[in-house]
Length: 323
Ligand SMILES: [Zn+2]
Image (cartoon, rainbow, N blue to C red):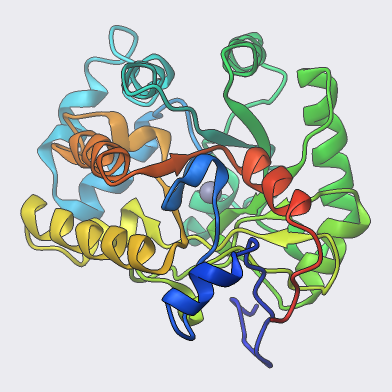
């Protein structure tokens, strides 16, 4: 399995810039985002799990030695720690922004004798569960975007990608444009070719698993296949952000640095925050950092948009490949 192996430089697309602006900025190309916005923020959520099972509590207790995991065993039924859609919607509504939710339809088979397979095969949800169908439709009607979170093996399977896209589209009642692969599994360029073949318009898998940064210095959306198919590179993911930060302030400092980079380059900052991270008991202070990112970007004049809106904007920008 390869993750974003970079065999050759990938062409970036940049929205048109005016010649006067180019002169003023010397060699620096300045993208023009809609309505004169200075840079773009794309908010995304990968929906891996919506319920917490007893064995997950045990698994994470053993892994993290976190007593909350044991306590949450005994609040089962009264508390649904990972069902945080309303919290996410509230945060975004009060800031006047919307995000993209990538929903998973995992079908990988686990082996009960091999605990290492548990996290990849068990504890997921049924995309046809009435609660999931209801929340997908509520998000869609409220202006949020719904995309496919490609299952673990789908990054090398056109059949799985096509099935997962078709199933989600039946639930949603309309076409799905975007995809992000589970675990950021990405074989370059095969995964992008497969995604395009089955009809996706953009992907947002290109990012680091173990740190927060602009992977391979990709500050803008780019066209990995030299055609209309678009990559929205992902720079901030919750897991590595907090794993590599000693405190909330340190995590925030990293985010602030990346916001400043995106702003100074007129680029795109894509943020991935899993839905379970909005459980403040298990992940204290993390939802607050998410909101702080939104507010800081809005204060700095960012265009905050869902993946499909960024795709449509870039498509309208015309042929700017490889400049
Ligand atoms: Zn995932």
